[in-house]
Image 1 (tube, one colour):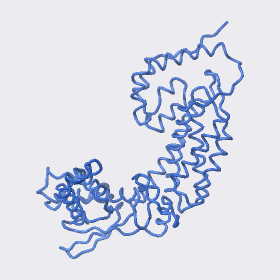
Image 2 (cartoon, rainbow, N blue to C red):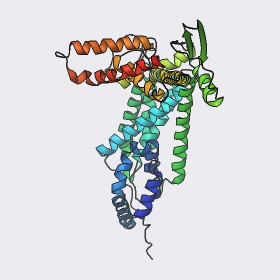
Image 3 (cartoon, rainbow, N blue to C red):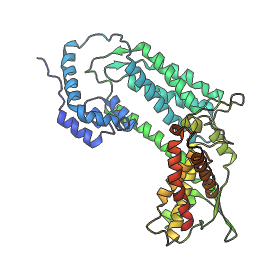
Image 4 (cartoon, one colour):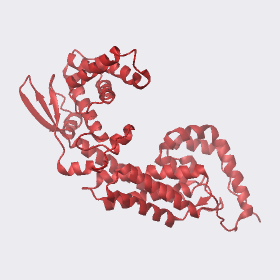
Length: 408
């Protein structure tokens, strides 16, 4: 007696897509746990995958059922070698890079000090996980040994003080190239991975995200600031974390270290934090090449002494919002007109557009904005508007908004 293969229902798949599309629950219903984890780790491929699946879910289910019926007649056949398509190769490389970057950043912030050997092992394991997951999806499998050997060997360039972005890049590319040498086709009905696999992969990934969030929060909240008031002739020092605690946990609305017209100074981090921040950087004194890509400059090749990382911008963004919110709460003139979140966002845009340091004061930032606007207006005839257009309009819009805090 021939048993009928399992059939999936398109309506149920659509319900799972509506309930948990970002977590890949519709792929989990179709017995595709690895594909479900890819959706979980990328928030539904940054929502683009969910948008596509909304229109193609019936076709996906129909194709899945057809493959199940075809595989019933091919049970017991040996696994054969297959070639890797360009689409799968790119998917393996990109997903391996993404997982390696997330785990590498988590380890970078979680480790008490800079340990390149341990960081290399974590990067290798993360890249291996990402490449292996995509390589074993959709009726194919890869040998874990080849992927691990390539990722492990390439990740040790981190010991040579190479920045994190390039280390993950080399490890992911090497693991993808060598791992595809053992690509084999497997029957669609084989259940090598189950829901337990999905739960295990998601648990480890969430642990890395939690470590990353805790590490970034600790670095931001531990940063100390000094509020210098010329009016009251005072200097008050506190950490950002303590200010947040007093504001939102203790609800001390009448107490604030910020005052109108005060200047903020940021206390430099200690030596151990400087060593951790330097792990973002390319510490090769012989090669100081700059890149035009903002993400590469801010995350990969910034100098810890002269330039700043994304954590510095996040620190200033948090402190600016606390300052604007405190001044708006204490003032009655700006009630209903001044929005702290809006002011903070436009100030950060002006900082980036004018090329200023995130720790610049309001007065110096306004002077830079005036200089930028004046230069553009005076040379508008001979200027190339394509490269400066967004900066000009951004600074022009941000200038009166930044000045509005002085009117509180």
